Image (cartoon, rainbow, N blue to C red; front, side, top):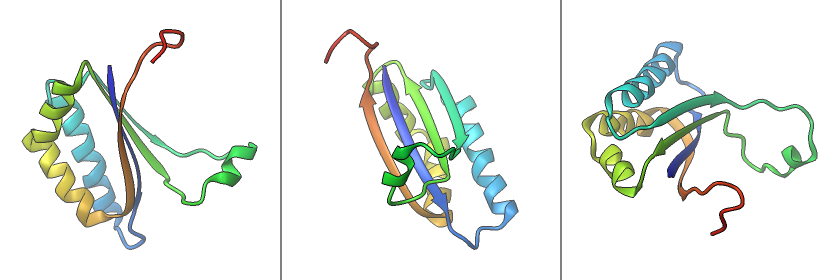
Length: 110
């Protein structure tokens, strides 16, 4: 399984309407791109553990998108819905990180 993980922070001046458009575009990508197996969006929660003090940059939102394999991720990235999402992200985000990981079950090794 391949996971595409995006941490992001909207610009401070993003309006509620623009923010909703961004989340609507995420939902459209999740539901309309066939290679997506699971798609989760979350808002960061802080609750006091020590590791939170290590975070130099705050990313209040995360998206975790799962695919069966690398070709599935590549199909997602090339899909017009993802292209539209990317255009919106570049306009509305102050900062973001995106990483792709080949995932295995715990104990299966690398």
